[in-house]
Length: 196
Image (cartoon, rainbow, N blue to C red; front, side, top):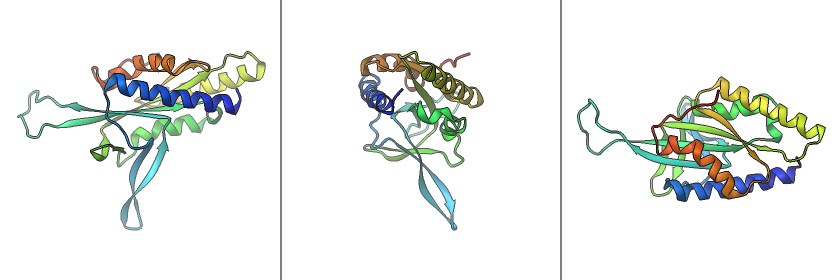
């Protein structure tokens, strides 16, 4: 797959994210940047840990259950980071590095329109692999390598999975496929199934 083909897929993935935002009624983020505070020189300061290809965030109310009712009500911020994986995933550490974002010691934070910077209480990283439509030996070999490396990342770390989508898929087709994977995190029971 050419670099241009991957760029076009990323653009459609970002369009698909916009479609999903409308369908799922999620919070609007100011950027695609995920941040975390780090201790440096005796103080805490912000660093950017990942620029996503799509970020979805929702606030989920916590019901009292067996605890006493508190005011104001508590909300959890749940996030989904979408990452297109191709060229950089031919190396083993890259998808694993993206998958580890959700376990930053000081949490993962995102800038939400109207709320400011909020901590994501749970972050699901979905690695989106553009499945090639060409069948050249080189492309097949590269796809198998990307598949192996992204699979390894998802099996090694919680809250990470992979979705393979045909490279030429439209933004709507991508959104349809991804909605099935992310709806449970944002609107459903909170922990959807994981492959295999």
